[in-house]
Image (cartoon, rainbow, N blue to C red; front, side, top):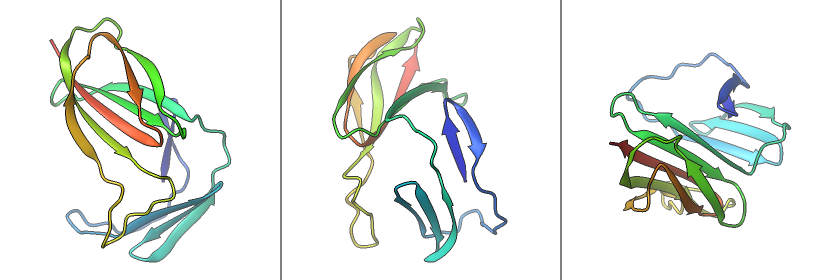
Length: 148
């Protein structure tokens, strides 16, 4: 189990396990306050306490080497929309981007019969080297931006 903080990853928990490529697994992450419990195929796999202070809003920009696209990743863990300015450091980019948003009530849970939290992808405009966008409450947003 890894956690990314300020762009750096740290291992919170390491445990030997057998995961097979192409196999399907039922994975559940349960968070209760600072206690995190991990389940694999209905069985508790591990648990730990994560009591470090986290930010309720963060963003990072990376580049997909395979496509050359910039990927703006934004997490808004607040209960209200967040308006923020994104600065791509003077890069020339296309004015449209593909945006994928995962959002929902923090208390919701996807099950085999209901999936209230699903990614939604659409094309958005207003993209530039510097732009302002409103990010939904309780959301993770990915903007894939093509450079010129």
